[in-house]
Image 1 (cartoon, rainbow, N blue to C red):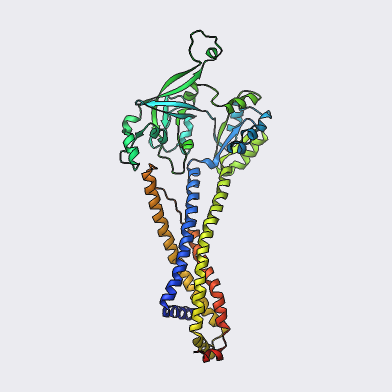
Image 2 (image 1 turned 135 degrees about the vertical axis):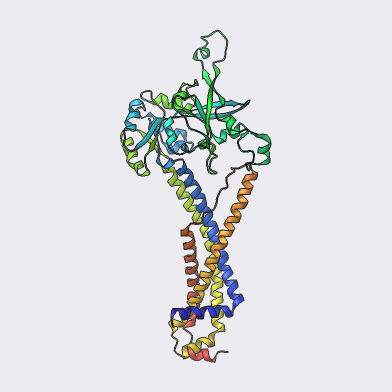
Length: 468
């Protein structure tokens, strides 16, 4: 019996029991649909986070500290554990260290981190945010190489500032009158044309501390803290952030390196800053930002910096932890879908066993005319395989439809809550998931058909011919 004959015979047998075959296949379709939609959700979350890292070039980013801080402890909130290593005297991050790191062939750009809290005022509206100083050369690197509106700094000393889209929202300003925000947002936000925003002047307000006033050395009776106003021109606005970006990474305003350094402010922005300064052997920068040329340079540069007695933190390390978390999520979601498919396999077993009971005499006739037990077994294997392949294909289509519907509903809900205007794809259906779902459906179906096929091959032809 040829392969084509087996397939034709199997399809003919399934066609004779249309309703039972349909119900059995429907169970496989639902199982595969659940498996595909759930795993595609986990894959979609992972893709969105990965794209956010890649869009900001975080995989090639290092931060260098002058003390042996335990970064993981600091990120988890355990300041005492993070500060254990701060008693170790290390090399300060001075200009010589900056030049040393910049001379490494793998380093694309390096500069000292300088971020401090400010208050901005524009068109009579105020909000608290942070100001980050960046060199003009950063305009050639992600994510600053693409601006939403306007342009990047013209020089390190330009009296310019770049607003984030998040900060613009904090000022209750909107660039797009038709953007899909909530009714509350449309009521409270004021639309402002881009042409009147780019080039306009914004006030940056900072706090300064007068030590003489604090120690009572001055007799004017003023408070030791006062405010200074710096007026800067708006050069550009960053694009709308990705849905998985946070205000901490996408918020705030940007100023050129030299200009930001000249803005008067209270030097010690946090107790952490004071403690780290106190334990350094010499004065220097708090943190150096290092951008590498490619991802493969991360390991060698890290080892070289650690050999120079610097503490190095790479966001790529945190991404490995995130990826392991996504793996656990995918396994949990896949397990739920697999359970539904295993339940469907019981329906396949039931269908095949019932088919054997109904076709016992037919099996006896085939054996009487020379059909072997292996050929009988192959017929039932093919029937189970057809159910698996057909159910798998339709199940993938069902999973795709469910994911599209769920994605549409989620975007509508986010738009009504005032979320990002751009549509977010929470689900991702890669080729490996489609192929894997089809193979898994076929495998489960063949396993389910193993017992009925083996039972059919062992039927005695004499007893089968006597069967009513």
